[in-house]
Length: 109
Image (cartoon, rainbow, N blue to C red; front, side, top):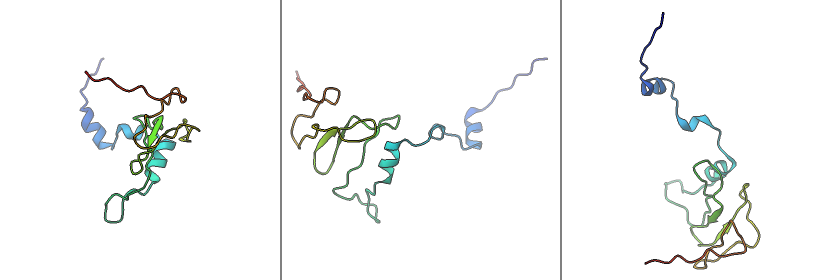
């Protein structure tokens, strides 16, 4: 005897508070980012605070930039700055795949 039934997937998930974000633990980058106090008690952004940037999988973006100062640098998989990659505001960013080289300027037509 074969028994078939339909399952309302969304209703099933909501009953168990299931979400995709629950499928994995936070990464080092996400913990780092979430531990930074970037807003004041009244909810306004705090000027001068560096907040690490993580990709969709929670890994550090290869290039990190400080929003307040405009400096950018390359990081390794642990979020540690790679020596010789820091660039000042307005300078061509370093190619984090080839740290000795600047990113070539884009041509717009």
